[in-house]
Length: 463
Ligand SMILES: Cc1cc2nc3c(=O)[nH]c(=O)nc-3n(C[C@H](O)[C@H](O)[C@H](O)COP(=O)(O)OP(=O)(O)OC[C@H]3O[C@@H](n4cnc5c(N)ncnc54)[C@H](O)[C@@H]3O)c2cc1C
Image (cartoon, rainbow, N blue to C red; front, top):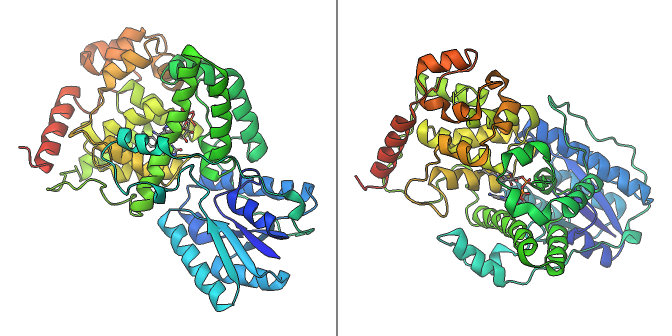
């Protein structure tokens, strides 16, 4: 008899640890409501996460088994459950977030003390970071090594190994202030099937097309991130399906499908960073000789608040921040731009922005969030000296009809797209005339750019 400890892997299909346990005998699945770990998860994501646990429980019950749900410290709960059911081994999947690693270490110690065997597996990524070098200067160099590595097929557990169980304990509920995506593996699978039917063949052409994102939010890009973050679907399953599609198509379609697979390699790279730098959420990945003179004090605080409220006077940025507030998600293009405006034009520490994202995103991921913030902030991997996105030209390039911006910034309804694009550079008087209810830019576009360039070059010792 074995216990399988579900953590951030809230699914049965394509679950490596569960699959290995199921091949070796009867399995008792357990989820531990660990309030300390959950306290670090934003409320919306916590609600989604617990909905996924509920769905998982429902799924086990439909298979004649059950998910045992207990609250407390896993290093106390798991040995107790294991002893209670007569299990001689506890199995789980590894996670690279620092607190989760520490939890797993505590669980190992407690199981050893109780004379119970354990086993843990790499399930999060297609290629275990241990099989790669510990550091790559660019995503390109990471990708070329990563690409050479074999990608495992999905691991499917033997469902008849699940112990017949009936656990009356219910999964706690947390209310969210927004509508959440439908939880669980089946919802994830359905969403991915729609994307495979309708989106993947044009993914590369559409992934930065903001009007397409407004029209078809879940097929112009996959919107799989909440499910991947909760482990409601496995990355091997996505990779296998995308690769089958890749093999079946040619020419332009193949290029589009390949881009989707390439994007998954970014996620792999971010986990590679977290694996080798567990402090990715607080420590600059790149060593920078001098301190970066981030702005602090009341003015910076007011700017940060304007940024969170979507009131910077940069329409594309404000639309992104309001999408975050309303949906717990931001499309990747504005996600990059809002992070750039905060860390460059406003010169505010990336950690503050990343922490705000942690609290608001339903798809917050401890690797992709901090790794991407650092990439944008020029403190992470792949850093050019000073990476700055121009908020005006970004809108001109990716939302020239203004469809995305006006969806989230209704104050600009009726203003021509050209004027919305140029908003930060128009005169005060013209802005007042065009849209008196919308804010003026909180930082001058050129001043913000020059200041960021200077501060970063000083930090790098280049001035
Ligand atoms: C500042 C910043 C913060 C971010 N925070 C997160 C986060 O907390 N959680 C998260 O999942 N992603 C994060 N990303 C990456 C990316 O924006 C999202 O993965 C993507 O927008 C999710 O939408 P999608 O599933 O439709 O992506 P798609 O375009 O359909 O991409 C497919 C999958 O590839 C992966 N992916 C794509 N781009 C990236 C990337 N740049 N880095 C890592 N993985 C990527 C994701 O798993 C995604 O689901 C962040 C990016 C930035 C710039």
